[in-house]
Picture (spheres, rainbow, N blue to C red):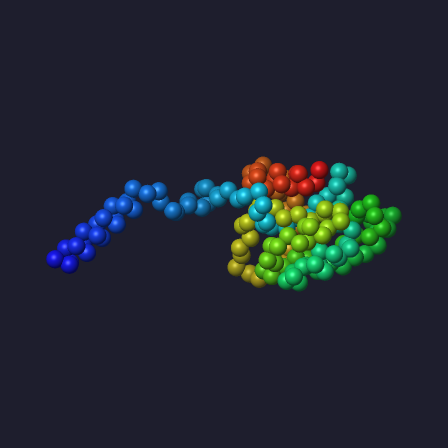
Length: 163
């Protein structure tokens, strides 16, 4: 009698879950929508003239709790101009493997040069590819501004911050 009752309970449980929506997300075809407050991959911004906004102050590296950011500043010259200030970041590296995506770097930046995008696809097989240099972070800014690169909710957050 107990076995029959256990089998009936098993069938009841199976039938109850049989008509529910599956939890599976067909990942490459359908990407999950992220919230407006999502903090994903970093990017460095350029100003209206196409020059870098980063002045190499290093506040983002100082405030980073996981020590994932390295910044080295250099002086701008008349021949080699990177931005409209006297200093620029000659070396800017973020170790995405160490980053905890807290967003402190974005909050502390005085020129709003760094922002966290809604892009979350950063996985790789090699540790070296998780080091994002300045040129790669500037490319991410261009990629996140293009069509189909990220979520519109996160893009709206970025646009609202720079206004």
